[in-house]
Length: 408
Image 1: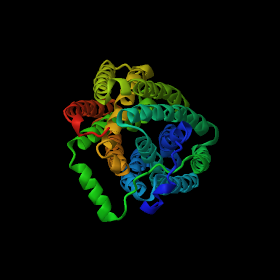
Image 2: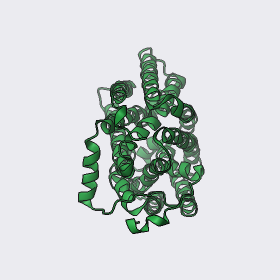
Image 3: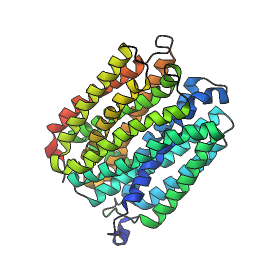
Image 4: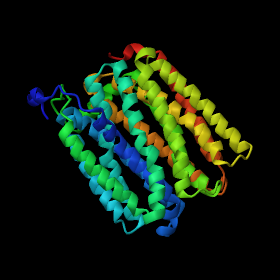
């Protein structure tokens, strides 16, 4: 899409269902595979660190691709970039399904993540195209609440499929889901970018990022979402190995306990959707960050007391995930409200920071768990989660003093 085509932009809003599906495709691809990760060590005769790369590099691909997807959508439009990304996701999923080695699987996961990131970036960008700042926070809350249903059932389905038909069956499901979302987006999502940028290129992209970087509010909101994401992704990186080694859970049992985590996220996003417009971004962010610190403290106490029952981990994680549901929609809405005319670039850059930080936290936890110093210990998980939650609280407080920098 170019400026001369602006009159083709439709005023009809896409359905909530397609926005949810767009947002859900990458989280589902991430979570459905997690119960299979410990078993992949034996399948491919490799190390836990190599298997961990199927998670961390998937996240890196999402992070880096968002830097391109957002600016592309500002120039060419949301719709064509989304359709291209979903097509790439389907190709990557099919390649994962038939990967002959761990190296091939890692490469295919990178392609899968790069394509799927379009749904994450553009769902929130479309919402900001159509709604005001406070209303967009509520709508993002509802979208992410709905998208949490997929990762909630993802680990349970993935664990069951792994035990029934092997790890490949999870990718069979992702191929099918990707095709369904692609068809749905083609029929239901009209163009929402009413003010496309006149040019696109590396210089224009860097100029957009440079413009955003001059706003302190953008950094405060983006860092808050990044550190809050680190709390959650630290858990994703360490939990599969902790519950296998310390709690002796099967992949399907892990998937069932993970439902508590996803229900917590749904609850937090529901509260954001219900109250963000009434209470404001800043109240919701602060409440989420305080709840996160308290929940991580409880997890640490459980490990200190050597309580290795699954509920000692997954119970507090319910509230940690709820905290994420309170913080993230509001921090994201704040980041993309600094310059609504650069909503795609803002969504891409802040999303890249968010997922990149999460990937780093996940990799750090995985490396520490595999080290001799912390072998068979849950403390790497606690240390990274605690540090991230405190940093999210600090940057969240900075947001309070920068509210005047945001556009309605």
